[in-house]
Length: 483
Image (cartoon, rainbow, N blue to C red; front, top):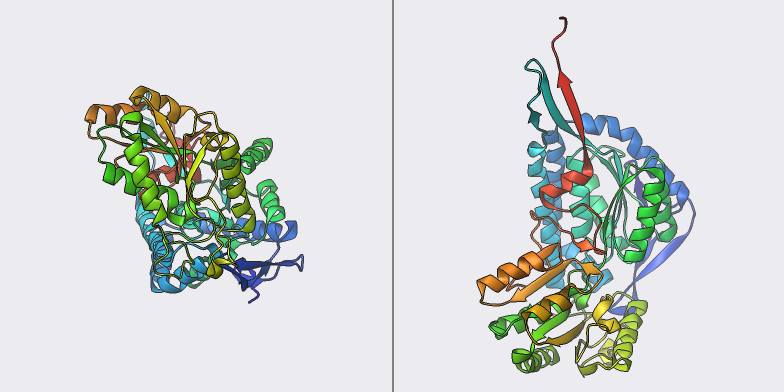
């Protein structure tokens, strides 16, 4: 299967003439397809198409733009099973998780279609009684969206949908590790009847991404991915005066206090750490547990993790599947080995999947590490795999200090029955998203998504917060003609 870019309403091969392969991470003998390895010329063509389409698209009434999103939502809903199967095949997560993500994509399209009639400004009192002073929300312009592989339906759509409803034209550069799912999304948007140039898809790797970030006709970049890449994008955008939005890493803690419901805390901690093989920026990576319940919590967590079924996403019993690539698998194993050298105890898991039926995939047995201290690398740096580090602390004050003592601040959770401690945690934890008696992973589509410190830039995604990035404010004053 050889697939193409989607530029100006047409499917065209990369002008480089080069393609790349994507293989199934659960079984690398399975070739998903070959995709265009785009370069600067392909990006330039997409930018030209988007800029040509922008004047007509931005003048269209928001309700008229909404109708395209409603139609795309219906088309995606009708293809939910096929899209989920493709997602599982190229990304590795279980079919139920893939189906849930695809369903979330449908919700995102419908949510932002409904937001079309909520785009407005403010009427502002003027010091002059004869002046009408107000603001309007204007489209940002042409936006480049650079998206990761771990949520190849949800993350592109939570960028695409608000960008389109607020009157922008879009160029999507998905991860080269999830190109087929992006192709299917482009098919949906094409069949929804979007005018030529309003949405464009450029496949490829680093060269395509750098060309998009540096393209002078792109007014803004929304990026989800690694911290190092995000910082380089910020520098490039500042240099040429483009707006940017960054969602990067996380080192998300759960804090377990002595009055927690331990059954709940164990199940949701394991779920947050091990679903999707831990390949989520909001995944639980640290369990910070007060000494009084640490032994019991650890015993239960280890027992639960040992019972998890590892296998391909098509296996109905699989709790977690493979990692996305050989490089990702080796990185997880390296981090575990380094933690052992620094003094952590591996209580279970932490080896490559050596079962015969897993031999051709990128599997790692889910790992629990105990006696982790705050200064260890495993307690500070993002691993992005099925690894949970347990840190023992004497009390709530110490737990808060340890939870905040990292560079990241995306998501955090506390398990407690004490309302006072819950409120204090919500106020003092350095995180953009906080849960009480819930897992760290996930947020509803209508709620803002984003973090603090090194996890995010200064804006939020999803919900009504998305309009702050995809629009700009124009201030308008009306006075009567004549004296």
